[in-house]
Length: 500
Ligand SMILES: [Fe+2]
Image 1 (cartoon, protein in one colour):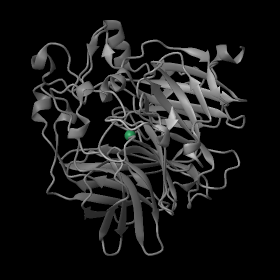
Image 2: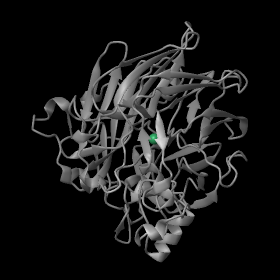
Image 3: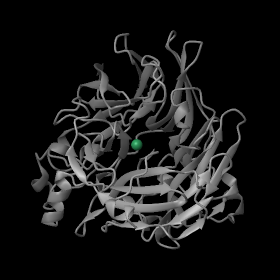
Image 4: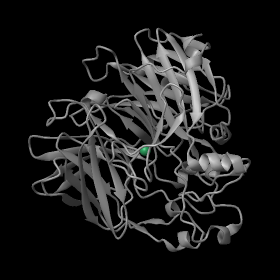
C-alpha cells in the first residue's frame, strides 16, 4: 500500500486479473481475533464496523449473472482497546437457505441471473429473491440488513444470526419495501434536536409512489407519508436536509416484456432517455407542504454525498453523476467489463432554487469516484469535506483503488491509493470520540490485496490521508467487494470471543 505520489507511473495502475479475484465467493464463515496488524489500531477507536455486500457469486458452481444478484453477507469487525475481532455470516434469507439446500439456483435475479433451463424455465416467474445484500444499519437497538426491493432482515448484532424479516416498527408490512439508503439526521429540528433515521421506499409503475419514513432514536416510527409522482422511477438513494427529502428521478423507461418472457431481469430492461430531463423531487419532511418536481440536466445518480439549505432559498446537493444509466448487458460477463466503455461517476454540485425552480449544475472534479461520505454530524448541513472511493488515475474510468478527500473550501484534494494491487470498498468515516471539526475522524476501508489474495481493513486519519495507513488489519481470507456499511459505537462480540 502506498500514497499516490509514491506509485510509479505505468500504463495501467491495476491488472484485470487482480481485480477479478476480488469477486470470488466467500463460502466460509469465520470468527477470530485479528492478530496480523501492521501499525497500531488507535486505542480510542471503539465500536463495531458492520459491512454488507454480495459474497456468494455462485451457487454450487452456477455463476450468478451480476454481483448485485449475490446473497448478502455481513462482516462485523469489533474494535476496542487496540484489538479487533472479525466475524462474518450470511443473511439466512428464505432464498439463500433454499438454494444452499438445493445446491442450485432457484430464483431469478433482478440483474439478470436466471434459473437453469433457459427462458422457458423463467417465463412468468416474478418471484425474486430478497437478497439482503446492500446495506446494514444499527438503529433503535436493531441490526437490519437492507435490500431496497423488499423488507429488511433483522440480525443479532453479537452473533449475526438472522432473526427474520422486520417491519421496522410496523411501517413495512410483508410484501413492502424499505430502501437500503437511510440517512441519519444528527439533530432533528422538530424533535428537540434528537437524531432521526430518515428512509424511503419506492413503488414504481406508470406513476411512482415515494413513501418517507422517520424513526426516532429508539426506532419508533414518528412520521410516515406517501406521495405519488408521474412516471417510472428507479431511485437508489436520496439526500436530506433539516426540512426536505430530495430525490433525483432519472429519465428512465422500463420494458417489462423481456422480464415476463423469462429473457432478462428487470434491471436489464431499463433504458436511459437522454433527451429527457431528470426530475428533482423535493418532498418536505413535514409531509404537509407541496412537493416540487423540478427538471434538470443531471444524467444518472446512484448516490448522493450531502445536501443543505441556504439562506437564499436554495438547496445545494452534491451527487455522483454518470452521463447515463450504466446498462447491464444481458449477455455480458461482468468480470470482463470494459471500464473504458462506460462513463465514470463524477462528483457534481447542484443548486436548486426552490422559488424560481431553476437548477444550476457544475462538475466538481473529473476523477472517477463513488461512495461519498461526510462526517455524520454534518449530514444535511453545509459541509466542507467529502471522502470517497476513487480511481487511482485522475481521469478515465477504472476500479476503485483509492480513498479520496475533497476540500470544497480550498479546492485541495488528497488521495491514498492501494494501487497497483489493492482494490477498495466504501470508506466509512468514524469521528474521533471528542470530534469537533469536520475532518477529525478515521476512515475505515476494506481493501482486497491481490498480492496476499486476502482483504485487510485499513485505518486512515481523515485529516491527512497522504501520511498513509495508521493500521492495516490483515484478514485470513478475502472478502468480496462490498456495498455499504455502518459504524456503531457499541462493541459487539460473538459469545465465544467474549471469553477468549
Ligand atoms: Fe448504494
